[in-house]
Length: 485
Image (tube, rainbow, N blue to C red; front, side, top):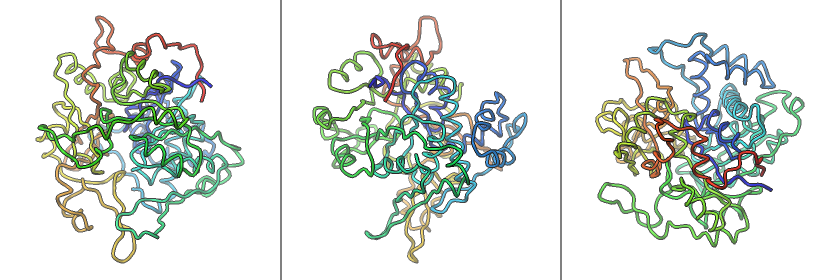
């Protein structure tokens, strides 16, 4: 069994889009699409006119044309909407989502994986977040309908996912226990997904689906051991992500201390014992600061199957980051002015979140202060139990008075940013408000950002995914070797 030495990080929202995943996959490594917020991305692409025709071509390959036509009728805008027009609002996920939302989420994930896999036989994975629980069942099913090879999931303890993959491969009804703040120990709150109810007749049309491999993203041996013991289906390996990686980081173990810049301080307790990981008997990949061939060699010598790299790919030509942002951030790298701040507050989840510092983005206090608080996408909302036993939804980035009315603490809202809207802007899909305000981007990046210039060829102002793969893998780069898992 050939395992990829390089996994391309699954960066959301739509930074790891199908174009990037396809480029990496065609080079013999594991290309990964992000499934986070992908329903809004699909709607945005359709409302922008789908000028390339790629989305509609993928939609035409979905097995239930009636569901596809409903989405096209609702959102497709020939020629594209005007820049001053807003993107249409989507229903917000709850524990009982409307059928159209489950259909949209399923089809959106299908489209992204279909396009990434189209025309070649390389491996394609999808990255989802345990913290974004409500869309996950529909997301997994849509990716599986397109033949996804690997599912990666972090930001939590995804014990349920492996068993769900087993059931979805047979189009069986599934449920997902969701986290509810204030719930009693014996409470069992679940979101349900029945493929035959959402898409009548699909099991007969598709037959048994391939069950993808499952790679949880973890930060400790203890978590790996817990997943092996408690997972409701087989775990096929792990990605071990350190605190230098971009996006959300696991909080430091023990008491949280901040350095002079206000960032969480990580110590010896946060270092993973790779000897113990090796003894578990499953393949693992190391992530966070593995962007050059010497680090790849060190990882392999430590027993890893390879490495996962995100930051290097976030600035490559094929990534989904808005081109001007990409160009400006790479310029800061080349001028040796690039800086990444690990914010303990910016994410509504309360997890540390890495933010690249760039003028004109939400990394600037003035830009943050100019934005009116609103929560209209709701991917990072927290579910909580009301006094009457029903469920409510709140987000630390919503208006403070709303958050407090829902039982939240005002202090938890300080400096929280609407990552849902901000990250969509980073991918080139900013929402336009009624007062004319355009949502600003926020860029997440790992500590390796400062070294991104190493992928540039002489005389070039940008670099490709192939440049990254060739450089990182060095002597291990063999694009003609087909990978399998």
